[in-house]
Image (cartoon, rainbow, N blue to C red):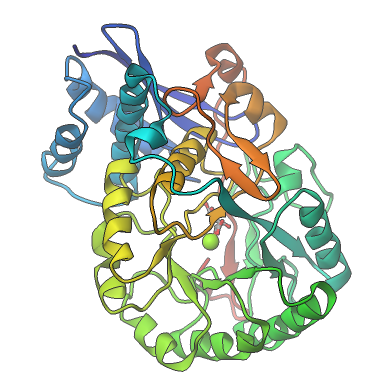
Length: 412
Ligand code: GCO
Ligand code: MG
């Protein structure tokens, strides 16, 4: 028994991905996603320089012990870089264990609790017409739930959409009005909360009018509001029956959600930038949220996110795992296995990866009729084509950021 090789593979087919590949003395391999959008190489160094030497000769069967060893043994705890690195090791070990058992990973996690995972995609448009076209395109692709982001009159950028994170951008399409992201410095966008708060309810009214009452609609606030502004938005969106309002206030302050919760019945989702169960301690116990947004990739892997979701389940809080294209196919596969197995699954975010990404990562998941399924291959069901990955070296890329009209930096 034992791990004989641990490689960190960086590739940028449509965007940057960091993958950990572990190999055992029996030649079984496991993959884990360690992609941290815009800060990828920090995790590469954490893994290569500090974690890989600790993995060689470790017994790959002891997943819990390895998790505790990497978390407690480092002395320095938590944080996105540490937790993404631990997640990659954890997922790779689960992949190995499931392959050795000859089972898809979800079987080791307790088996399937449902036939498939309801998924939502990202519809967006600068104008209502563009937005309606984008929603229609999603419905044609089979989506049964849609996140709606829209341009705000007077602001240049489409609110909440990184131009390197759209489905078209992932497919390699570049629009003239979109600043090139890969290889460029962070792009500055503009922001005005009052305009946004006035405009968004009119958009949801129009969307409900056009698409009817049934379609689950989501919206992402990207941490841009104060608690009282978030409370106002939640209340003004109540007539449009949102599935959730996401990241309405900056994530550092858990208590902020008390005020939001007192004023609105719009369901709340938070946590894509959280990385441990401790970030959720108060908001779960006080039932201030309805959905946990953490991804397997950013919250310490299957071992830690499962623990967190079990805690959430006691309070009828469900999963809503982060699944933009900056989560690699390996991270998505881990999310699908976990989501299929747990009882308190809510919804899965799903944006299709680009064609080059799908050549680098061979995947067994299926996407049918609005539902995802991880497939039944042993392990995660993802393999990495190392030759193909080698064709696409790392390219520095940043998310955009915002400034207010007077030049003040605002939250993204
Ligand atoms: C989401 C996220 C993305 C982020 C991106 C940052 O809900 O999918 O908020 O839109 O911008 O994942 O890395
Ligand atoms: Mg989000």
